[in-house]
Image (tube, rainbow, N blue to C red):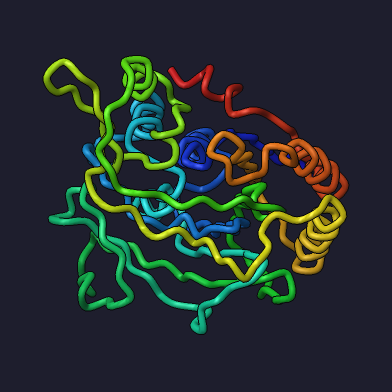
Length: 303
């Protein structure tokens, strides 16, 4: 078996760049792949785009700019579905609360412009004969579930907060900020406001002062007070073991693995992310012939 690329990123919106890079470099097919999303969060939000997905045209520079200026850490999956990269999504979580574990979603855009995106379970609303419509089989699973052996190309997308998480809530506000904060938002791709809120967050200058404001309310936090999301090192190791057993028993043979640290956004505890990452990679190396890289390794060749 040839080496499987394993890409490590800081924050999860960067997966959009990784997946597009993987397509352009022949690691995965350009469409109809299966995404195994291993995460405490669904990341199934709809982004507030200023530029059309149709404008990317397979250009890595365009994709880079789109990733770091248009997307946040909770809304990067739907754009990839609209692109057609994935048509099956399995969300692996410690516990799911939804009674309905499998649905058919349909992703489409207003006037087929690739800018204002919609997600619906109603195929008629999306348009049965709408060429812009992208169907998606969307299923919620845990490590106790068994998967049908898939012939599709599988991408395993892992957020370290699946193994231990520190959830945070967002608010809607307008607040004066320093010039330094304003400049960081504009120029730093890892600025905490940008990576958490993506296109919903804006900065503006008014009467010589700088302000942060929300363009629209963000979704309520998925914080669940009855669940202890941050767990001990012993529990982390147990979860890694269960995850690896799940991969082996279901004969999952990915063409690409990506790992998101989520340490800068704070969802993976700052005192645990290194422990989780090192032990997870060791376990994946026991299962697969992975070639570990950083996203910086591929960002450096984007032009």
